[in-house]
Length: 162
Image (tube, rainbow, N blue to C red; front, side):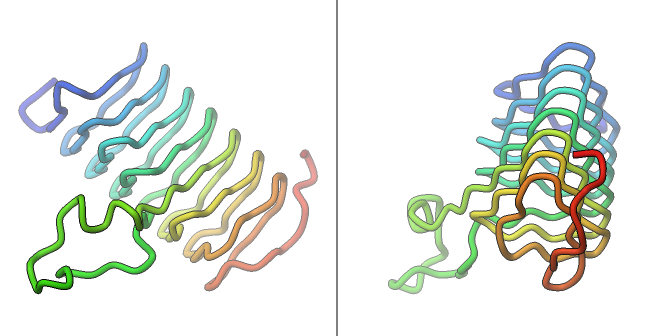
């Protein structure tokens, strides 16, 4: 670890994980041979599989699971609260307990590629071998082996090799 990395003691790192400078990791797990780019944050209770590449400036929040052999492009953002609020009913800033029942979990299957600057809303499943085009906003589940793109992301075609 170097002084330009913030990696808490509760992070589980597999073998041969490559960590760039200027990262923030806490309470997450990252499996073998995965590369984490610069300016990436991975929050507690997020899990990254083996042989993944997480490109710079991406944000992987609590509740996100990414399968093996996945590519996450630059600036990809995952959302874990589809109805965010700053304050609770009492007018106080929300804390983990206030929004725990709204925590939206997202599952990314194996061999998925998500293009740069895409946004993945919460409670989404992206099936094995799917491809998400750059700049897409994923608002619904993506079946295995399909290509989707746009805002909101729409079906383009089936993958040829799946």
